[in-house]
Length: 150
Image 1 (cartoon, helix red, strand yellow):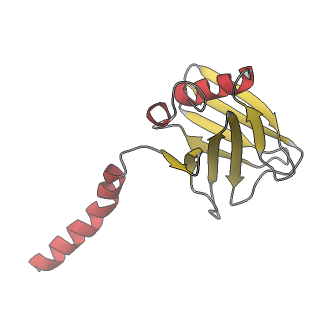
Image 2 (cartoon, one colour):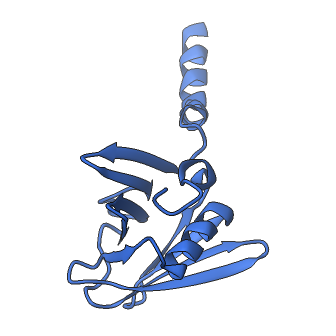
């Protein structure tokens, strides 16, 4: 009977341990082949959303998914960051593949979005067809450099 209690106790505690081991951050960063990627959410997931900010050669590529699907091509992508003090919306035109490519230098919209991602609590990803997903910004301040793609 003591073995069963121990196994049950371990099973019940496993999710809490896994959460703590993950460091409590919803954001990851990686560098490969000259591209730095900052990612939150789960890419190619049937449910939920994902946001990928890829930096290369002074350009920012914004890629998103909602329920495993990219935004419609040649449409508008809205990213709204929110906290207790308010919300801030950024709008970007998507290309043929549904992603956004923007220069980092001189782009006030990119600078504002980047700052808001580092400061606020959540980001809502909205597609022109009405689909939306809310993602945590927990850990974005530690993961994203102060300057966009810096």
